[in-house]
Length: 417
Image (cartoon, rainbow, N blue to C red):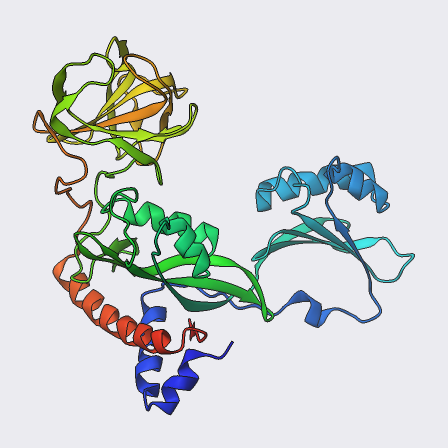
């Protein structure tokens, strides 16, 4: 893949790209830690054995197989736990390297690789003492652009997959846009979207995906845009094009991609009781046992059962807002009256208790004691930018938008971060 800055040179936009790169670095969107790889200093005469951890393997078993003593095993296990926070090995994920001066020499160095971006080096000194050092592996991080369009019969997920957006990134985008959109009702054929996210490489090979840097979706209420930005206090968040907080204190749709089966209405014929009465929330179809996340952070003020709602939980979020979740099959462990919950924390599981025709979540938002439509109520943002941060954000967003415009013309390119 060619770097975006190459095409920008051709368009006399070099200064803009370098300014973008400098700004991205200055606000620490990506922290790149460089190091000299241990292999570069390795003696060519050394003997290295690489062992991939498999099911049933234990640290002590693998160490003993390499000729280490029981005393060494105990010392190494304690050092790994205290200095590297490694207590167990994970099958099919972790890797160990054993280094010897020659093929018949004792092990003098052990390298544990618990992640693509971190390795732990244990060395045995002349005094027989094992020392531990953690090394961060250099990341080559790139910002890439993907765009798509909703076709007839599409879901956003299918359209995102067709556009080449990885599944994990799509989940993150769902979580972001769910603050502003209902993916069941707001998605229509012809709507366009784009996503800018990180890809992490090491030695020219892609290792994993990073974070969503920006997203745009042509929703029914207008274009929804969000940009990731690091504030002067070091915290990060997502903001709209004007620098207003894009992450709301409550989500419109607690369960992503769940189908709406009944909308908020002041007059609805009840499917079980048969008479007309207000439907004070929105129903989302989901399978029994589907986790129900809290739509926002708050304190549980009710966890009970009644004939209509069945098992239900009510959360107070601040002086104005409460949410209610009904027809649960069961409550989540540890969720009781008085429990403080975070946004996204599982509080229960979908069911069909109470007066219900099938498994679903009944979700209500109550504002100042009055039920409101979760799909249309204006939700408060968690955090807006201060004056100085907003000025920096606008400058950053304008430069990032310039880069995105170039990527729109040549989506196979990327911006080096």
